Image (cartoon, rainbow, N blue to C red; front, side, top):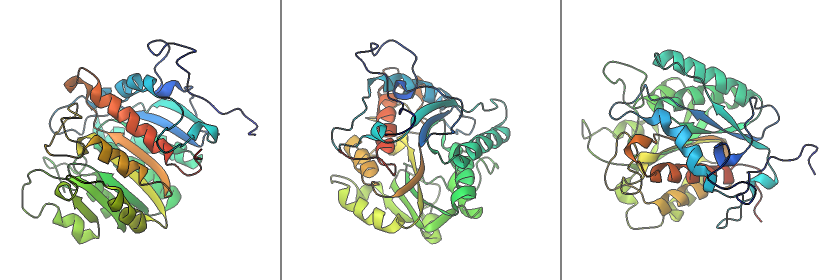
Length: 317
């Protein structure tokens, strides 16, 4: 038995789901990652968005919807709270008036989280946050493999002349040497582009690109067997943009694209990452103002929980 009792989500029979403080899964809120194996952390940033803002409210709404989650995964039998010390670290205090300063603040916060050995699951916020997180992870682990689920490749060189925005993080990550490009897979890319070659830049770097048309009308379990073989052998980061899922299921996002992944396919992707050395993950681009029923945030909360369930050291009962 561990020397310190493991934190547990507050049960619905101890406090009604509609009551209590809305931390992620109603876990304890702590101010330091010391002693934690994994954590949830919010990054309420949407200064990098190019269309509809509102992702700054994502972490709060995801936490609110997460009160419905219970400790055990009934499909995979994963039991994260039986073995890992997990808590909610709250939000990174970004600068709402300065994107570049916010990037600095996020990077500094994650340096501390990562240095303690804690594996963060981040609640966004827009996809810009992936860059400072990857910088912090790279300092500890070296080059990172990546499973990136998204409607968009997020490899623009600039947006309105700016190098840092939610459409640029993975080009910057390549340029800065943060990624092991032969261990990068992008899933769900689709929509229209500015040139016919927009996704070819990714392939030219060595990424495996799985456009959404390859995913239609089928299980993604076989694909994930290929993905695991490709990204295994080193640290892996899982970055999940909610707009990778079709807007019929996830309308509350800033840049929706039709004909996306289904919710079961999203679950297959995350569950298919079981067994990899996942050093961190994010769930980004939930924009609650565009989904007043909270369905998108509910989906985001469940996907973040599924990410927790595939972290190293989580037993299956």
